[in-house]
Image (tube, rainbow over all chains, first blue to last red):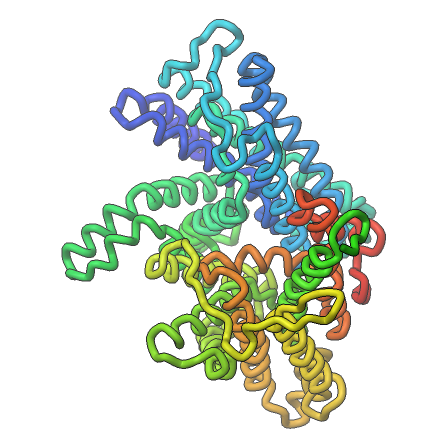
Length: 329
Length: 295
């Protein structure tokens, strides 16, 4: 446990020092956003056993809601974020209430279909700007004091948001509530027979996950000062599944690592393709950058077939094997 | 001019027919999904991508090998089916012992892979494909002008769906298949080669998607993304109908297509979401789906 705390402290120091290390802050902020998004998603899939195929809807809703509130209504940044999170929560309540009426594979299909409906709504609604998205949202100032137009100030706000979200999830997972969620994941009929109102637990987990995903969405909107349709597509929902899967389902750190890998991949796959084209002489590789989906799809297939525990899961298994001690979480 | 609710009859019936055409695709695809799910317990996300593959095969047949529509209508489902058999044999097979969700995730990955590949070769813009000559004209029915090709799509889809229904519900082969859905181990004990049956079933279900793709080629733009936009609606159709019954899948598919067409006439903005709204209502009133059995 002490080693864990030490690890987190080290990581926090690293996060705080990133701007000093010369790493492009926007890039680091983007990773933290996706990491929070993936952590929120993992709360549902990894710790409750519910596969939501529509989490992009919450990311997109919060981004649009915050952006609209700040740009058109001119409300302050902190209220804008809260409003976005609240809207994601309301949507989560509605979507969750419908989706938990079916379980397993149907749950995934229903969330996917409902999120597609949200996508079409954003495509047609007036306030979202349709295909162009919502552009040029003012970042504003935090509590009227700190100017967020400065990337460095914004960076520390994003770090704070990310840490807040991460530790909230950590707290949820280790609370009695989190234990019930795990019980539902492991054996739902038994949880019911023990007298837990499973539907309410699932719904609460769904709403919490939606709100945290919304927090990531609002933060993402602040970073890029825009909300676009791509935030709400099913491809985004798929991407967050992959981030979680590649990092490690049901582990706290996994989704963060997964998000890091995927964002890095999206940024670098073009360079990789160009290099491959140089080496092999096959011109097709240069187009790899435009169709990252090929790489993403390939990783998906490999992960599902032979890497289901993800990086962190595999690492834990390896450590336990070496230590030769019984499993501990 | 005859009008109905203030809309010219021709336009009204035209939209209904278009709805029925879409409904035919929903029916064939959800039928394939149901057949596959029954035996494999896998929701085949790649169904949309394979439908797209079918449409592209039709186009490629004409563009590269000068094979006409009718040849490809027979050939493309075979190719797609064979491709499906490869997917089942080499990838899906390893996941049967795991949670069903992994099947969905694997086929999702395959979808991204296929879409990405097609996109890298053909771009996102659609490829045009001309309607076969024999069906290019339209028939005047007196009250409306019926484009022959659209009528053909509906008739062909319904015939294929009914044939599938007949084979599964009324023949000995279908009986074995249904038994395999109920209890694969017992069927295996009777000497039926269940793994082979599973492979062929997946191949068949996927071939249906390929068939629908060829049917769609002359009507819709053939683009790499045509499948995944459709498959999500089909998922909603499957949730509405429930996967318990073959006829249910056909009726739900056609019916929702019609409703979508009607919505296009009266409230165009809602036409892309109406299926999802119906899904939400069905979930509230009858969670197991219209034809589904509560398990």
